[in-house]
Image 1: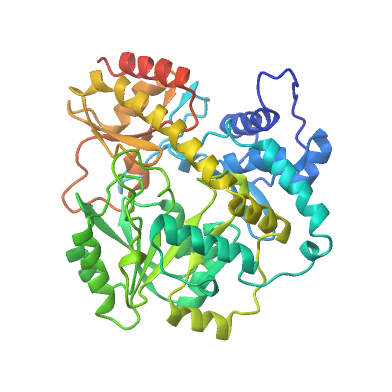
Image 2: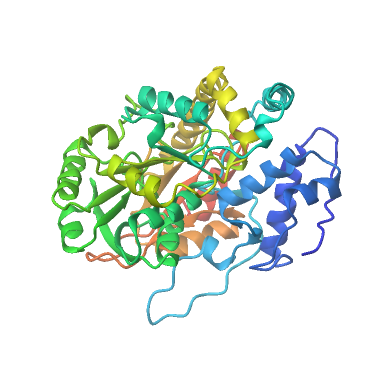
Length: 466
């Protein structure tokens, strides 16, 4: 592991964390930082660059969110395989192509978020207050599930915003969904078969597979995971994103939700993992209640995170266990220490409790809605060439080809105009039973400025001959 010498400029044009983020991202794309290479710890890099550790945390957090690096528990941060970031999974009988590593001026990543509106001064002040007020308490080993008052705050937030019915005792706080999914595998037991949406959130599928689970892809229809294929899968566990399916954007209607809940109730050891990863961002109509809110028999395991709603570097997620699984956790896994610093938990608690989170969330909804509406307005002239899908929620939309272009042709044409869009094929665990369908790309907008959205869509219009 080498030190990273990053030329930082304090001219006010670009935040320091953005300079660190851009430098590492470009080094990865150029191949100067190779797959599997370990990065310096946030503390070590902060000392080397003489910046605050929170600055490096935010840069690393954005890189984590976009898939450039990965965090391995107790080991550190490592560079991801660049091939997996931008290109579809290889189809059987064909060799995977060598990726183009040049950076794109307009990166429509579905994983990025906008950090520019983050209340840095408020977060710094709360951090200072916590260290002054809490004294020694925050340096002592905390409860394995997470600090009681933070779990109480999360419990109140979930009930008010998502309709989740739980007690603080059912909530486990962890450093990201990756950790919580690994912990959940310990609770559910080994050698399980899990049904995963196809197309899928690939990170979750990989975590299940790495833990020895048999991952069974289940195709979607216009209402989400197909119940007929779920029943045929012989899986005991179904992993779904019902409020805003990733990456298609499908919102699962109540009828399909009740069908999947009925499927879970038919087997004593069947469970649904509901990943509610970006439910805070909906721009039309009322918020969609969680599936857990309709579960009266303890069949839904609810997952949520603050990485999307606050910042990737926060790395605080939470899991709500139904009582049968909570009993297993408390009997067999109670000794596993919390992976979240008590200092970070105390800061987040105050951020929630003092109303800063709600105000920040309202601000981000308005900001993202503005970008979402601008993108849709810019895409009106694209409608003869593409069908627009997955709008009005989340941080990305889909463009489905109407002219017979393949996914590869769409992506490569965009790259010639220095734009990067993301193929649906990269999220497919297997080819759907009814065929691959028209070329479809994912277009994210959260990390782009309004000027970049305007300029980027102009370039896409030229690239796709619209």
